Image: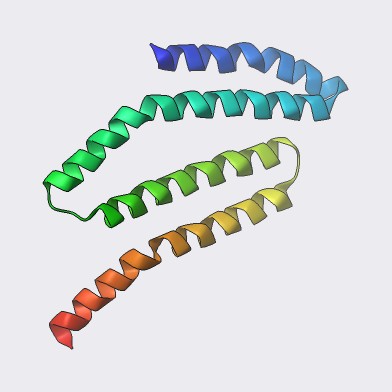
Length: 128
């Protein structure tokens, strides 16, 4: 039901955003950012129980919490990167969108470094 509300909010807000783009593009971008913020906050609130379930499943499987953290932080970084890049494109700046995507890729790499280190140590333990 919440998904329908969020989709409805976005659909209803498309008309004012489209009209504002013609006369006041800055305000259209601000309205888009506000709608995006509300939608993201509601999605995070909805995702909290699912994330807790994922955590419980990984814990039950005996997987360390650090690895679950890497997975969740990587997913969050990818989503934030996509939303910010789309907002930059919506504002007409392809170069800023590309910069955000590059920064997001680097952030994911930095977040995943502990996992890469653990895999490397595991392989070195088998072959070293």
